Amino acid sequence: MDPPSPWKTPNQVMQLHKLKKRKKALQDRMKQPSTSIAEEPNKQPIDLDFSRILNGDKRKNPFSKDSLDQNKKIKLGDPQFDESNDKTLFALLKLPSNIIEKPPQEVDSEKLSTFSNLLQKFTADHTVETHVVEKKYKHLTIDWALKTKLRLMSAKPFPWTSKLKASEEASGITGFVRCLDTTLSSTLDTSPRARFHQTCLYWQHPHLPWICLFPRSTGKVAATNFMATNEEAKQALFTEWTESFRSLFQLVRARHCPYFYVCANAFTCVFRAAGVCGAAEPCALIAPTTRGLRHALRQEDVEFTMPLRPDHKKKLNNSEEERIKNTSFDSCYDTMDDANNEKNCSGDEEDPDEFLSLMGLETEEIKKINNAQARACASAESSVDSAAESLVCVRGADAQALFNFLLNCKSAVSPAGPFAGVPPTLLAPTAFHGGTLQSLKVRENIIYSDNKKYYSIELRGPILPTTVHSLFNVLKTSTSAQFSATFAHHKPTLAFSWAAKKMAEEEASNENDPNHFTKAFNKENLSDCGINEDMLQLFCSSDPNAVQSLDSVKYNPEDHTFTW
Image 1 (cartoon, rainbow, N blue to C red):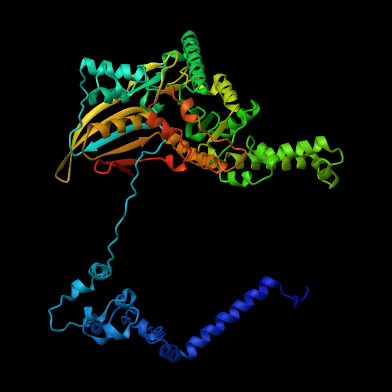
Image 2: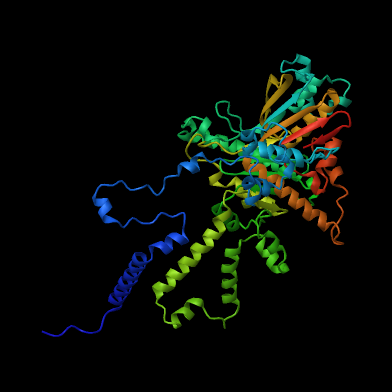
């Protein structure tokens, strides 16, 4: 039998070291119990009298409080309460000492010792009166977001009701269809109710009474649609929609319509005529978008920008050639295109795959690397999908390409579900081929708040930007009371106002460029677009402050100003 080896493994060495350490600690505790007690007076010593434990004597609980400590209470005048402890609540709040030192008065210590009363005392001594100055504006800003509900409230009744006379309804419809200013007409009814009815009208296509086509919420519609199995009905509906869409686009190109909206299941698009917001050429905004939709636009050679994307400013600071290219391609696709162009243009450049193969990597490993890089690029591009930053802006001649793309886009029409076979909803402030004249739903209420009576009128439906301005113009001239308005937005379209503000800032900065022509004829070119002169002046302005998203507005009749 071989003798045991004198060598020990590292694990055995560590075990011996731990045993020696525990043994030494136990010896120190057994030899010097008094020292530990002296050093820690509040700590109870460990009971090592095993004979007392065996005799059944009850051991003292080390966590129990002494009777003297329980009966001892710190009183308000005790110096231990005021001076010994520097980190009391009074020192932290930096309160004056006269809060405590008032012996002649009867003081309730329980009330003063509560934190809420001390905090009230502190805020009472240190309150600063703040006056919030509200900014007042002479004109209402433009909000390009579609709204689903608008509520008007006033302390006095409004000068109209939902019940209209025959002449009032006829005058409102005539004024809206013919784009007339009824205040200047001598033959039409100019009453406030007729003008109010005129502001509540809009044009829509298609119109299916059994389906709510705006907003397209699948939760409020039946899960099945009879047109899903009727190919003839779907084809006829799409043919009519194509004609209406073409008619609206031609009206915008001819500047006879200022704008119109295309509301699909997955996205919303707004086409704006040249001259609106100071733009020199027509433009279109789409929100929200996905990587698949942007890829489809690239395949159709539709160049676009993403003004709300965080790296947009970085792209604008690149060279001119890269800037033009980046307007239509995202960063990951730019890298791939640059690599392909370098490979085609310069034959001396070495293929990355060949370089990796020369480094000793196998073909399957190279494929894994390429796939991982492609996934990283795809995830980087998809990070903004369905968000406000995914908004796409198309300008100039590319607006025509976008129009052709939407005409042939199969994803714009859902093949199944409650909207199966139903093309996107077209909304416009002016008449077009196939458009149906619709009216917003009006409901009157009386609201009581803080023992005060308020009159309320609620409008439901697709509320266009010009509708808001027309309604406020009627209110300003027909009532002398203060009123307020609150809006409920169609959330996917909130990005339109943010992008329009950024684009207006770019247009304003370009006005200092000597090669940039002044848009002096925008108002004259849009004089036949269907909106009155005062509103047209605002819609043609290139001032970035004229575009802003609004949640609520208050009108003051004394100085004729708006606050929001």
